[in-house]
Image (cartoon, rainbow, N blue to C red):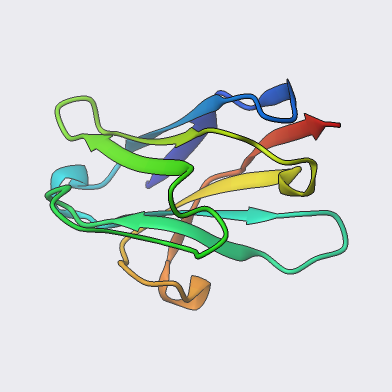
Length: 121
């Protein structure tokens, strides 16, 4: 079965950086588009970034553009999210999702369990 396992979350001060990883198994990773989403307390899950299967194209939400970078290593079946200049309001559970290149979470059939990112002020 498909498994997506996120890691790399934690506590960081405002302005700091974190790198999230998502290890995938049970799917032909190198042919799948991937995405990252986040969900803050009492808020809806929102799009962060997505990457094509080849890594050649990426899209970002306006709120993270220029600070976050999505990338992938198909040899390691892993997608990454480098997050710089983090803000307290970006405290959320960050989720990896597979099989779409879209801002719409409904188009992603596979999801990880999430990793908590807490940004202190």
